[in-house]
Image 1: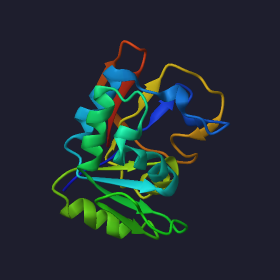
Image 2: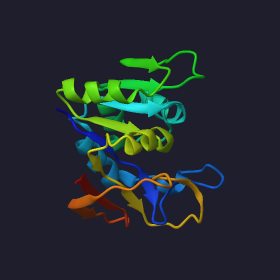
Image 3: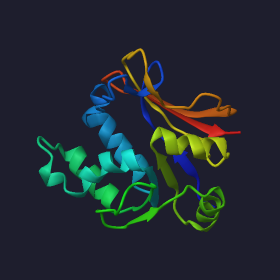
Length: 185
């Protein structure tokens, strides 16, 4: 059985986007990006909500990204090499390879996907992650904490979610980012 991993980049006060919807403050830098690439390399499937998919689909054509670094180009290769499932009631179609569109987040279908998958899965986007967290589907919570306070915005973890966690790994990066890996107990 594969694990479902939620790995947001969040401010120290727990937000993935500030009150204006910006997440530029969370740009990981080359060292963190390279580390993320290694974490994602074995992942077989990414589960996304519409908004997260719309952000991530830029990785389909990294040559269009200005100032793409080697780690960013590697990330694009890793991302394109995995399957994607997008959950949206409003999106008409998906425009990236290896991507399918689902209208509803079906807890039983995701459980079956985890049970049959040979490689781990990730869930991206706080709203979709909220569904997975509330359903008890998330096996690991792996936040990257950015050295910034934003004072409000979109929370990385929705209100009302409780989860017992065991810290199994941690790493500090030169740019002040911290990676924490927790396993659900």
